[in-house]
Length: 461
Ligand code: OOG
Ligand code: NI
View (cartoon, rainbow, N blue to C red):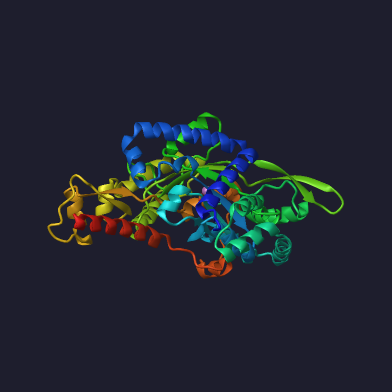
């Protein structure tokens, strides 16, 4: 019988290879991993409740290999093939992020595993953006950019052939899986030789550094890899103490007892040498795109919780009166903390008010005998009498305002532009060749499955 290598295994191998490659390319990333590992270990020692929570949800073993990356693509065809390639690794498009309102001419999705068991085996995810060339005002430059993109093939023939083989047969055997991860890794590699002239690079760069970052290179080099920390403030503090130039503002919600959604901070981009392909000579230059980032993940919010989060974040920003940056960091953090006092900060309250998603567990010792048939209507009673307990479902996705802040911190704030455009998920999905999964539906179904299993267990007793 043919032995297929599981998609989880392929993703896991790929994630490890990517991490090794990025450590070679960007040594600071390696330092960051060490730091995050130390701080995660001491956080777990200091917070036994967090330790047991992560044990219950199955996240504990995945922590040390947990990371996300980000890439930026130039054409619909590239995005379409990227979807097929990620599917071989069990990664599917989840969520739609429109960054245009924040002045970044891209829209995006995140490729990731979907089921809890798969996520816990390997939570590797890639934030994937598609450049919206149609938003470049300069028609001549747009044509040049389109021509440059039309000439490149970001996947090797072998990577595409193995992807097709997977689609046809429903799996890859060991030798093919090994070739596949090596071949696909090449797509994400940094190339010092750029296929465009220095003047074209400069013209693209003058439009927006992001446009140059996508169009002027052979492929979508991975621009950061982000480990998950359990205490982002501690890592941030240590980074600054070690002279790693972290940005002053942690994106997302403030520090809380019960972390919600996602908090992120990055350190500045590297300047890298580039050889441009000028007609008669080699022209040297440089490019900054790649950077480091860390993140702390908290509980996934329901649509109601998310609306409250968006509203409070907006409120904090208007109270500050300007965009948060290094110069007003202290004031912003103070305002943010104050504003978010309106958001409940115990898991019990978050559950009771329907603001966040939870896994349910049957508490064996206190389990209520099935005097009558328990239903979802009895959840409050069963929680109150200790028959059921909850643990947070971790947020596996991204936040558009934070993502825009991350883009801007390494692309230069001066580049912000107001694009006249509407959010266009339908266009994105057309380019992708598939619909993106709705992340809220995924969390909701995890919660429902978990509760249904608990009720069935209680009713059997
Ligand atoms: C992606 C920025 C978004 C995050 O963590 O929010 C992102 C990019 O810079 O290409 O990675
Ligand atoms: Ni990121």
